[in-house]
Amino acid sequence: MNLETVTAILNTAIQVVIVASLPSVGIGLLIGLIIALIQAITHVQEQTLTFVPKMIVVLLVIAATFPWMARLLLEMTMELWRHIPDYVR
Image 1: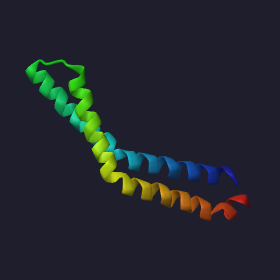
Image 2 (image 1 turned 45 degrees about the horizontal axis):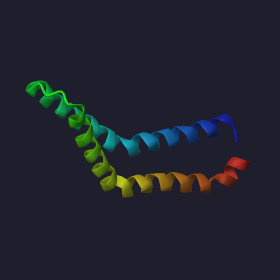
Image 3 (image 1 turned 120 degrees about the vertical axis):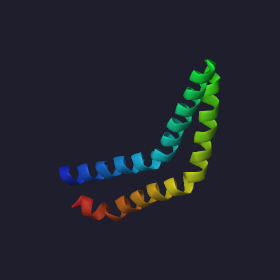
Image 4 (image 1 turned 180 degrees about the vertical axis):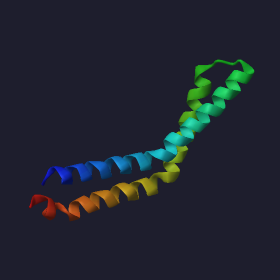
């Protein structure tokens, strides 16, 4: 196993993590922005007002996209397992 192989594996792993987390992080950011705008307009500065809706929406998005995220991670893992003999050489 050489440095290029390790770099390629790490690069793939980082890409999979970023792509898999993008929907929940993006929706959380969007909901946070909308709630921040509503708070700025209404002058209500309650901390739980931002946390609870974001938490609920992010958990719903994770629940909705979990099969897709699991498939991405499983495909990457299976690809690593398939190439173990090549990595050992």
